[in-house]
Length: 249
Image (cartoon, rainbow, N blue to C red; front, side, top):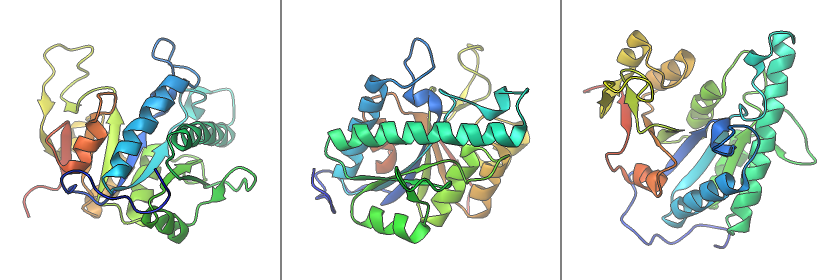
């Protein structure tokens, strides 16, 4: 794949610009859940390359829980621990960038904490220009301040770059009434409204992220990213996972 706009070779996608949110677990070996797996990053790279090939502009926000979670370090000052978690997301971003460039997808990493030797600073207009040129943009280091999750970062970045949808890649195939790995009677929603997610406390994204999306009418698609071609299906508007939306106009 060459840098720049790509020629579509499939049906016109529903969304022309999306933001994909991935937790740190997406980068970890399946057996341990810790560290960075080249197999996992390679799989993600091929899936994203498939999306770029049909002309979709794609940004990614990555978590860092496979390396370090600030809230799981109670003996460290919370602010300092959150900054440590932000640095973990940069490691994942660089790993994904490496995997993408190995499959010839032009990629830029932008960080909310300045570290000019390895990444660009986060500048919304520059990020948009990269997307317009067919590059994948990976946002790392959260929003650069403690006490905010990468879910909130994803909603914030999606709105700033004018994404038409926020794709939330998870280990399950949508939003359920309970954890389907624990409760065999849990039921999956094909679609659900933002207010119902907030009212029932369903584990989609944190309340700040859901509220940002609700106030700005940004749809959220929750789906299993580990299933082959699911990211492409999501941008095509196929009914996979769960659509979180604002209800009838």
